[in-house]
Image 1 (cartoon, helix red, strand yellow):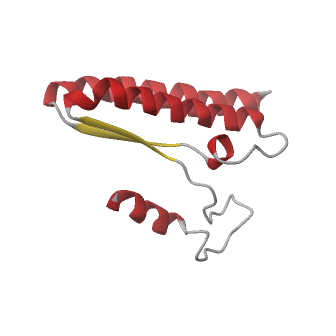
Image 2: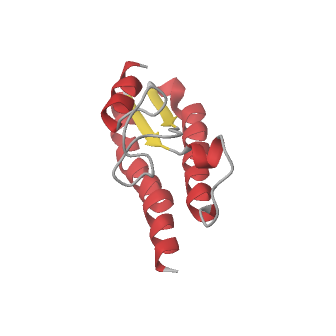
Image 3: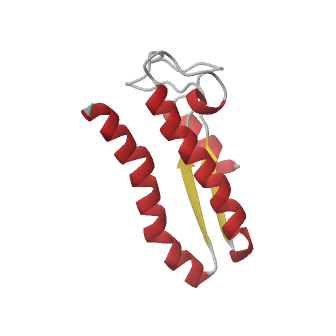
Amino acid sequence: AQLLNNLIKVNVEGTTKVTHAVLPVMIKKKKGAIVNIGSGAAIVIPSDPLYAVYAATKAYIDQFSRCLYVEYKGMGIDVQCQVPLYVATKMASIKKSSFFVPSTDGYARAGIRH
């Protein structure tokens, strides 16, 4: 139960609170960018067993980002949600990057370019 609460606190509450904290400054400056991190587990492929809450919190981040984009695009604020499918990380089952599975650094660099 604690793991599920932590997932919700980090992915839903954390994303919402940080966004709420930075938006007033961005609105005042009439510019800014918010980049959230979703997951292919929520958008592209069905979640693995026992990942339902994780996938649901990442779906929240994706939809939250889409709604914020619509609300704030006219104010010079860009909001996007990166949705990685597989990225080679210490936590992932795939630890070595390849053509189809980027490293964390490779994924971040590609996201910045676009």
